Structures are given as C-alpha cells and as structure tokens.
Image: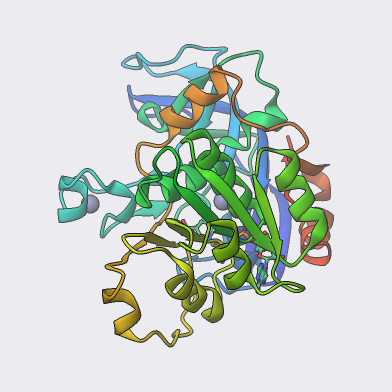
Length: 338
Ligand SMILES: NC(=O)c1ccc[n+]([C@@H]2O[C@H](COP(=O)([O-])OP(=O)(O)OC[C@H]3O[C@@H](n4cnc5c(N)ncnc54)[C@H](O)[C@@H]3O)[C@@H](O)[C@H]2O)c1
Ligand SMILES: [Zn+2]
Ligand SMILES: [Zn+2]
C-alpha cells in the first residue's frame, strides 16, 4: 500500500509498505479517505517539531471507513465511517488520573511520535475511533480534529453564554475556536492581519473583526466591549506580543487561553495578572472533545462548508505541502485524498 512519509527533515516521499493487519481483538482496520495537513505537519517536514522522530508516516487529522474489526470490537462495524482520536496515553500518571490524558507524561500523537494516518490503511485500537454519520462528506469529516482543538480552547477558557470572546488569529485554529465560542453562546471578536481571513470569519458567525495591522487591537477590543475588555481571550497567533496583549486586554475575572508552543518568553508584569485576577491556562490537543464536536455536527451547527481550501491526491503530497508553505495567507485547510 502507499504511505506518505517524512523520511527526514525536508524530505517527503510516497513509498510502498506492507498493509497492516489486525493483531488484537480490540483492533480496527481503517481504509483512510482523507488526511488534513496541519501546521504541525509542516513543522515536522521542516524539522522544527521537537517531538517528531524520523522516518515518520505523518498525519494526525484523518478519517476513513472501517474495513475489518477484531473479535472484541463493539463500538464500530465494517463499513462505518470514523474519525480517529490521534493520541495514546498511559492511563496511570497524574494527568491521566485527573481525566486529562492529552497531557499524559507519556502522550504519543499519531503522525508525530508514532506513525500516523497518511496511508491507504491503518490498524489501531477501536477505542481511538468515533463513528460518524455516513452522509457527512469526507472533506468535512476531516475537519473534526482541528475543531476539537478549538473546542478544547473554549473549554479551558470556560466560555459562558454572553461572554465576550476575543480570538487572536483567524488561521485554522483561530477559526475553529471562534466557531466553537459562538456555539457556546459567546459574543465573538476575531483579530488577524489578513482581511480575507477576517471576512471568512465574519461570514461564519463572528460578531466583530479587527484588523490588527491597521487598528490598535487592544483599543478596539475595549471599545467593542464597552471599555470592559473581552472576558475570554484565546491566543491562536502564538507570538510574544499576543500573549502580552492578552494580559493587557482581558477583563477583570477573565480567562486567557494560550495555545502557543513558542519558546520565546513574553514580558508580563505580574501586577497586570493579579489586579484583574486573571486565569491564564494552556490548552494542548484535546480531551473528551470529539463527542462534543461530533454532536454539533449531527445537529448541523458547525460551519464546515468551504473550510477546506484545496485537496491533493496522495501522489501529489509534495505539491500539497509546498502549496501550504507558499500560501499561508489564504490557506485554511489543505487535505490529502487517498
Ligand atoms: N495547543 C495546541 O493544541 C495547538 C494545536 C494546534 C496548533 N497550535 C498552535 O496554534 C497556532 C495557530 O495555528 P494555525 O494552524 O491556526 O496557524 P496559522 O498560521 O494558520 O494561523 C495564524 C494566524 O495568525 C495571523 N497573525 C499572524 N500575526 C498576527 C498578529 N500580529 N496579529 C493578528 N494575527 C496575526 C495570521 O495571519 C494567521 O491567520 C500555532 O502557533 C500552532 O502551533 C496549538
Ligand atoms: Zn492538527
Ligand atoms: Zn498518563
């Protein structure tokens, strides 16, 4: 079968591998249909993901059809459409015992630490898959994993009905966070530098947009919120300045959700945190968010149409990565079809 690998930093290849077979009673075999290219896949390709080892079958955003099941599988049947929850965890460490396996001390992400979904077939434990409605188009199903990241950010920021939620960044992750914040009843403000991305957000339920290149983001967000500042600020730009801006703009009793893997320190005076009793939390991957997102999909509440910017067949995987690299300003999600 064909698989897409990052052989080593800078080298992508489609190669032949033996088709995996079911080994355990709890395994499912999936015929993969779509794999989304994420910013982190681009980082793996460029050798900039500290967790990745090579060679690696990339892909943590993938969906497909169940083609075989082990004797002990109960949650899905052959022919079911599924999305994969792409993490493994130990179940024993402190974080796991707190019900937060996404930050397990031994967490592994498919496509990063272990082989992922850019393959004609994958075999994995049935507990990693969630069943989808068969009528959901594959090009929309493949967006579920990124939407779980946005859902996690809203969950960590405890977005409540009527909260003003500022999402910095209208890239893939910012857009998913904005859409989820809207579903949780937030009044959503999105800030970015690119008008086209802002217009897309506006057309999908965002209440206010700010072009941070032309406007003073902090002043404008204060103005929109009647001087209070947004109650929840989600940083999906992830640079030094956006973390600093978040601390300045968030309202008293507000929450800041940091998504950044950035190692560059921000300069933040503690007084600006304590005087407003800000809660600053990290949000990494997701935990228990797949059922939440799938539920919204079943209710037709998620704005998925038009989110995929372009698709490429697996044979054109290199062109697909190149396209993402060169078109960051207009790409929402590029997807590989298998
Ligand atoms: N914590 C997690 O679980 C997690 C998961 C996925 C991605 N991430 C991180 O989230 C970040 C966003 O990911 P993405 O895929 O959406 O990236 P992206 O590149 O698609 O989006 C970033 C957006 O920020 C905008 N931007 C850049 N500078 C800006 C500025 N000064 N002010 C306002 N907007 C600005 C860009 O125009 C772009 O739209 C990345 O840093 C990524 O590493 C975190
Ligand atoms: Zn991703
Ligand atoms: Zn653990």
